[in-house]
Image (cartoon, rainbow, N blue to C red; front, side, top):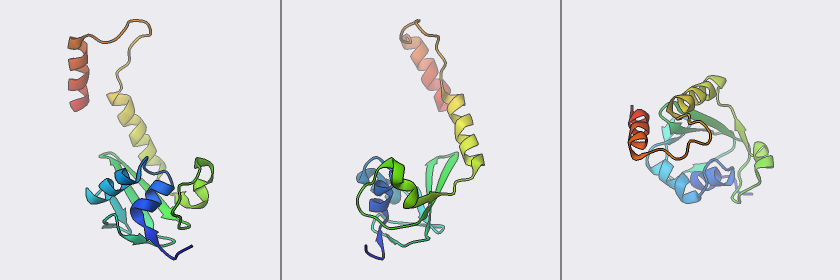
Length: 126
């Protein structure tokens, strides 16, 4: 393989994003950094580069490039191309964030009414 590959293509190939256009948009909006520097989608990455993905305001995922690839691979073998070095504290923050914004509804009570839905949306915006 080549010595380097585009960051948007690599992020899509290791399943960090569902589509390549989503990966490119994340690069353009400043949510992707390589070795601490914000990057454009055309940025070439090399082996041992550290890629940070700012998913939520509270969560940052960190990957190390182990091998370059241009084609999407199965989820089972992603670990041979990218090493996830995200600290455990980040996952705890994400779990806490998801618990806060999740609305618990009892089974069998049906869909929320219009008034309940507005309250749910208002709680998520806080």
